Image (tube, rainbow, N blue to C red; front, side, top):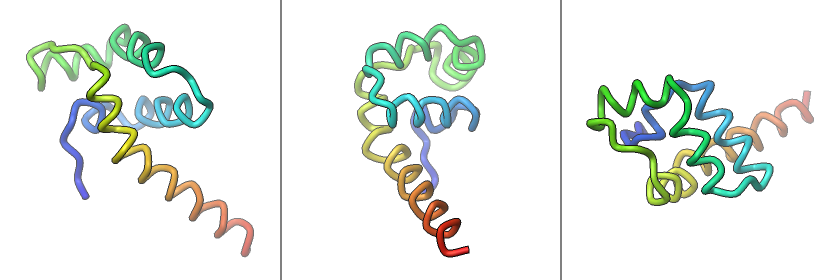
Length: 84
């Protein structure tokens, strides 16, 4: 499934950092503060979302979608490494 939300449109390396931070239990408000301070994020938000910042709802949606997908891929990769 192709995602179209604010976080889904960020560069992959930033999405990976978000996922790692979530996996490590970092507070959502800290992740949001960090995201809204990153120049690459600001550029995407400006270009595609009229400069509106990432908010709690955006991160909640990501947790239920993109983050879960990422977790499933990580589990599958770990299993593949274990089998090999």
